[in-house]
View (cartoon, each protein chain N blue to C red):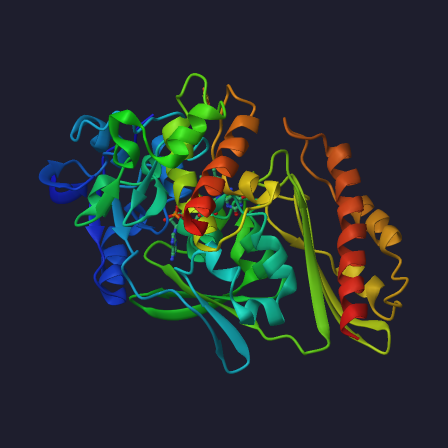
Length: 163
Length: 289
Ligand SMILES: Cc1cc2nc3c(=O)[nH]c(=O)nc-3n(C[C@H](O)[C@H](O)[C@H](O)COP(=O)(O)OP(=O)(O)OC[C@H]3O[C@@H](n4cnc5c(N)ncnc54)[C@H](O)[C@@H]3O)c2cc1C
Ligand code: FES
Ligand code: FES
């Protein structure tokens, strides 16, 4: 067992973990972040995407011991239980989800992408949006609604910037 | 699935990493991005007793060192997209990187990890073989350089010995009148390729001088195509005989038959990718002339 300290969504905790434990499991079981979904546990579906020190990372391909001292954000940090983050609202209005299993991973992958587009003051091409989410699999929506949600969130961001 | 147990060690310096790898021998493995190793461990296809985390070592970076471009083992795949040296000297390399996985994979995966993992159709091993890169390997005994064509021995098997690790790759700088291209076909964007072809060309007076070609998907590791490299010498850039080159090459290989594609399909695909890659490289050469 190894002692590590993780800061998850603003709260720090020191705990003792076996090296073989995946960050995804530690976030779910030790931090109660059940928004971290595990679809495949081998990097293929993107469900388990979290932000590690600010950038998206697959928590099923990361050992918790590697993250000692790191700052981690899960989907719970985005818009809380109200899900009021602009991208979450856009997923809702544009039918970007059905069962919702894949949704936390898409949101954590795409939220920084939306931010970057808004910072660059431009609407991404459809191809760019699809490339940005190419590591995430959704079995329900057929992706159209997710692409539309990204566009909507970028539009809201651009309008807010222009106002 | 979840991994079997192991002991975790965070290397604090290169010497520390080498000492740990020396101590653990067959049971020790470096972990870089974890984008291939952790899936293998989760499936229990790999059960190393000790992981040596090299992520905090200063082994990244892309720089010119004399006559070579030196790429540190921990350079992440996404670093190539905005690198002026890669764009200027290695167009085939830059093409190839676009086919590697997805954004999150490219942000974390490293070149040292990719070539050490040695997936049969991974892009960076093919790029290393195409450009005659040297792979710089270190252990407590010292440093040795291995030619890329001698590094990849079979699917997931390389010339690295227990206790050794890759510290860098060295790509000889090509002359200015040269270019290249890389084309891949996969089942789904971001997946490992079914087959891919890389080409480099030197040119003068509208003709091809020296050429190099690499193919993934014809064998268990990336192979060069010496027959086609010779065939291309002296051909006009405007009419390089690309389709014929594709046919000749496809007739010379014996690709695998598996759940993704039959051997015949692969042969046909490789002939076509060869044609397209040669034509793409010649078009770039004409634009540069
Ligand atoms: C969904 C998915 C899709 C992918 N698609 C592609 C793709 O299309 N093309 C592609 O090329 N790759 C793809 N990858 C793999 C990715 O590129 C990996 O990043 C890469 O293969 C391994 O790099 P890494 O740094 O993650 O290495 P790790 O996973 O950390 O290590 C891989 C192996 O290399 C060893 N190793 C690591 N660093 C060193 C070193 N410096 N010296 C010696 N040994 C070392 C490890 O011990 C291990 O055996 C994909 C991965 C996933 C999960
Ligand atoms: S659970 Fe991590 S990528 Fe599928
Ligand atoms: S909403 Fe069901 S998998 Fe995406």
